[in-house]
Image (cartoon, rainbow, N blue to C red; front, side, top):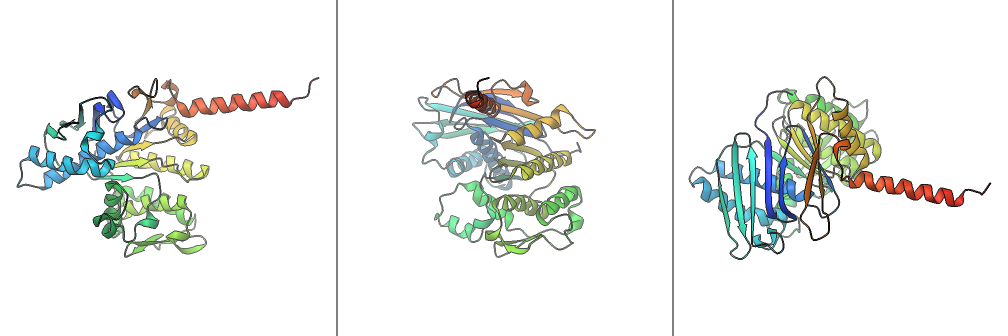
Length: 360
């Protein structure tokens, strides 16, 4: 893996949302979060994203003491990203206080929440973090037009990651000589969108926030394009305009949503290419194919292999705090709800087959 900027190393949560006490030791490559619904997978990514964003904003403000600036920013940003009415709602039910800490490179930042006092108290070093992008499970290109203005007027029920994504998408494409480090991935995505015989013209364009895609069928307005290709086009455009670089951190919620199996396999290859370039990646998934394609990268590493780590989130019961299990491959994970349900499906199918088999 090429030299790059520091990575997110560790996240510790105590009484934060669904977590009683949990620690995540991340790898610099692809970090895969699996688990049943309501186990906090997206919350893990969102709290990291929030801290990196706050860190970046505080670094840019040279006039305010860092600790005070971080607390002010957290007080505003946490509810916007988690869409909570109050900060106290982020404290685990039945508890009074929550604590979160993040290690990034050789620096650290931590904050605490008090349910009753609605306070945010923080401590930590300050550095200029790399840019980060959060991609939601649903495609965004078709709703990007006019999004920034409408969100600023609080007319849209979306969290702030969508607003940040819209700002990133509104940047114009860079000259190709500025994209050498990501050109292989851009070319690969280009072929997914426009086919093997894609020319040199842009395959994703926008005007005033409205996107068009050049497909083998011709140039189409984004609203006429399948959702799966809209998601691929979003990633392509963020690489083309420099919002995503080899030093960025990518958060992607359920990449497989609205993708057919062939595109899911292609996305796994794209994630590998991004990680090989040096990008740190966090994804959540419920998909058997995507999770196993990524596991194969760890089980059968190539010469330029990437680091991959799996985190299985599970609850012993509905009221318990979320437990975290880690492994470098899916085979090392005991609590894998994706595999468990596929095994249960096989058992159901076998039982039905046996019921219908004629008696000899």
